[in-house]
Length: 206
Image (tube, rainbow, N blue to C red; front, top):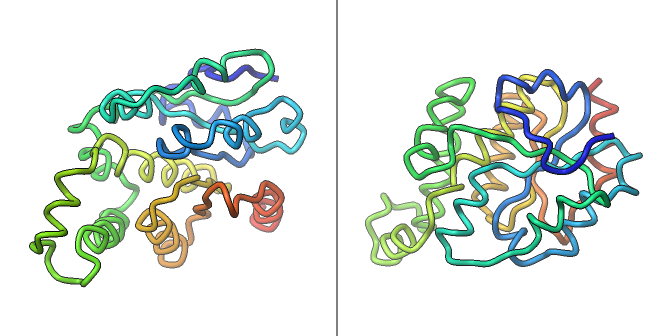
């Protein structure tokens, strides 16, 4: 078994993960749902062969949002298992650059399409007052990094990767990538997350 925050450099060490489905946590879940996060990483869940992943840019995000969370320290205890990914995306510039490292340019465009809709749900060009306000008020540390890391993990390993997030545009981006490019990438939030569903999907895709 492994301890939480065993550091793997992404993406060069993805091969060490073999066929285990991975679950990636968005910042909003880490900040607002400590106990749920612990259930994903707890030692008793290891027998299910689904492991949680924390990425380095999450810490940059929490600092940028001026939020304090003890969950990252708590997960270092021997009661939990999982991975820590060190990436090149742990900055605003890195987050923007991450999209350029999607496996195909069409995947980048699929993500940007859903992101633009988030900024202006009316479907316009993101020039409305509400869209500009939304754009300026959102942190950019994790917007694209999380999707890129989860997508590359699923694409290279041919095993499910799941993102836990409340952001609807991330959910729709995962759906688009899955349907258009056959990538086993899924999105849940803490209310509909199902470890068994991930395992069942993994078994079908072997």
